[in-house]
Length: 280
Image (cartoon, rainbow, N blue to C red):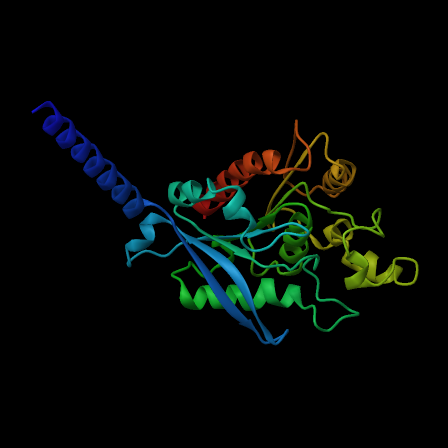
């Protein structure tokens, strides 16, 4: 008799656990991995697309955050290392897209290598696919772009160069001035070596693109850890924006160039973008 009761209790617990798991899955954000053909590079490029639980309501359309990975990572890096971004997608009812920027593209259309067209791909081809295949709000007031490290550079680079498309831009630990690092992270594979191609480097470093900004043209959020090797270039960017009277949010917090910092930083960035979307 006692054994029978124990077995019944076990079955009830297993049934409850299964139902609980199913209920969580029914209301959790969904992760798609899509292969998007790049006409500019003549190949498929993968991206992760996170849709919130509310996407099941087919009457709704959603804002989009493009979230870029860093050097030596890939399109799947964010969801593997910070699965909590699915909760933010649910909480803020936004679509999050993580494109593949390759091992060290720095999100340029390379002036020396025609096979590297990652500006065209990430700022044009992938968003065009997303707007056609998902229920997005196809307006710059409902689009933001951010990223970490190389992706922080990429987000600012693409955001400023495509102001008509992105209404808000962000960076976490971004390499926002590449010139102090002429031999690092394969940058010269896209721009040529610094000594012989200084013009390429000057034209494509984020801090120089700030000259193209007008105040309140876009919402801007920047942050970096105080133990990060990119701290100085981020402070320089902040000072230049202040000098040019460009409104922006800038934050330094304890932390280094690592996932512990970025898993915290992304929460603030997505909150910032949610406030931007709601205001519009």
